[in-house]
Length: 204
Image (cartoon, rainbow, N blue to C red; front, top):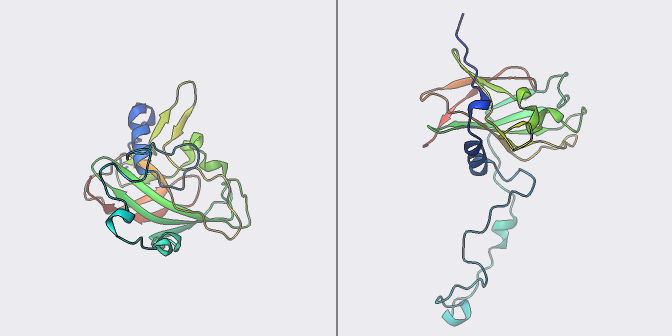
């Protein structure tokens, strides 16, 4: 029998979860999490720097770059939602599973089917239903944190609504760092049947 270690989410410091969440969560998250501006506030022209009018440089129209469709993420695995999950009828696309010496990040999206459109399984407070990362000897649960007076929650983007036939934007979940040289894991949980996913090592 192989040894299985469950990473205890309650032992992870609250501060670490909050900091890592602000670093890795993609723009698909909702709420008032917009970071404070880091540049100089006030006028768009810094003191001491010539304006385009003063320097004689003409402004270049680059709006097409902003309005263009974003590049499509690759698909490294897909999985059908379980009939017992609030995602029932939907299809999961796994885009990436990256590890560093400080964290592991799962990036995925969901395409709605004919089932439930409000997947409560993905709410951060239902962290125990989230997929686990399984290796031959260990298992890793999503990182969690606890706000004062509230329940434990996953460091992850929730999916509040899924439209039939439409694919959500990419969302992420934060896990403890996998061991270096981990090539593949199995995602296992209440959302979908087991699926094998390759791991990409990135600089930590």
